[in-house]
Length: 603
Image (cartoon, rainbow, N blue to C red; front, side, top):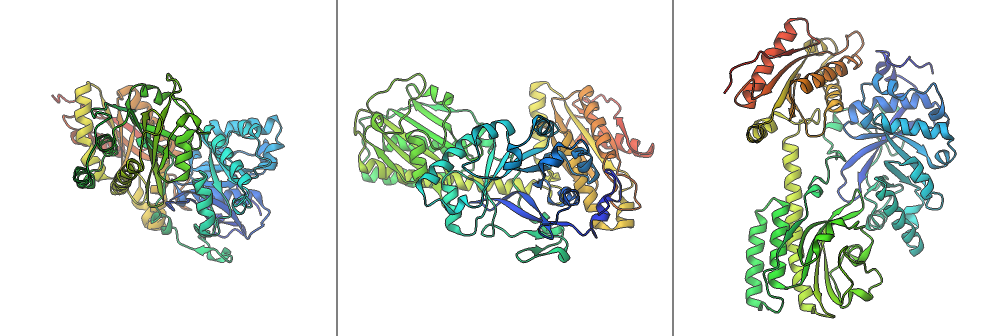
């Protein structure tokens, strides 16, 4: 096959009839079944044209984004000076953050200094790096430490060996090590529910296989047995988990509470029933996880007094148990602990997934000590917080002395744990629904509803802090011509490519909104004129680098208006209107330009 030069306007069009294409195999959360990305598989299977496969796979990012597309990459091509990954990505209108280069473990282990240096350059450019078909025997710590993969695909044979206790122990250790370095394990060969439960129980959150999802192809002529032929609109209906967004609650500070209830107090059955009923009613209407965990902690202490208490949240990305609530003397050091999911009595009990009573923590083989405290004679109740198939966290209660908790104490705490976990999971689902309500289905950006609800809060916060907010309004030039000449599918492709380009230049904390039609709004908190102009120019240049949306059409450019809060308006809506006026000035001047709104006398 003759490939077009990188950057050619005809590249995407040529791939439509190319003899080599790709199927996309969803990479999914094993429990939630939410996709984080798609692995590119050659079609026909076994096709040997690596350049053609890479082009076809990278160009699929325009449909799959913001999910990650895992693209196979041989060690030979990786080390070749002729390989220009950035040119490949730009030619298809993708961005590095949506591409993961998938290198086979054996080839990675044989890379010389040049190959390892190229991997480092890929990471520096914003790409992901993944190891493929890693076996527990060959997946040494040295290789993982050298490659620092963001993802590790396990050998498919591992999923079928987990009836062996040694294999379980090896996999648990691998999960811990890879997670500590910021990587995520992905299980291959998930063909049945038992395998899914087995790997998930050992901390592997993501997987691929026919039990989870079948590969999909956009070209029905390349579909093979087991593939589903879909249209590009199929991707818009998929729920995608953007990994950087998940677990935001885990950044919440450790909440230290007091222990007002005397350790020797008791609660009779009638009082217990009343407290449980009141808590259940209150938690049903609660959507804030901090409030839910605080209420649960207060209820537990009332029902089962203790000397110390902690509630941990499961961070499945880093394979950690993160402390969210702590109470009692000496618990301040809890925040300094590196709490692996499979370390300590807490990690052991979390893995068992059943409430546990420990009469003597010092003699338990998994015992660890909180920094700043000494070993002592103490008892422990550990209650995993589980809602359905979702292990959310764990509740720990300690009392000084040996065997100080009864079976009744354990049963009461377990009941509170069930109620709290259900409320916690409902809060997560509510947050997910709210996120979807604020998300534009075509581009994955925030939508106008988000702007209408959040903008007043942002303005009020900025006014209190005395800071500025920059607003950029971006309108695509000659967008109507795209729809008229190439159809609405080409227009949708241009909008998605624009969204990816905008996300690529944003800082953490900035917001990108699809403001309407082909208009996009960028909100830059704590940004003055100088910084906003730099971002605006980066946006303009990023749009100009996108390939044409269809054959015979020019590249997409943008007219950009810039305004500041509070200089250009008393509210962010007024600032947006000022940016809109400036944007139309840029458009009347020929487009592909940045115009700053004239200064006003807004009070």
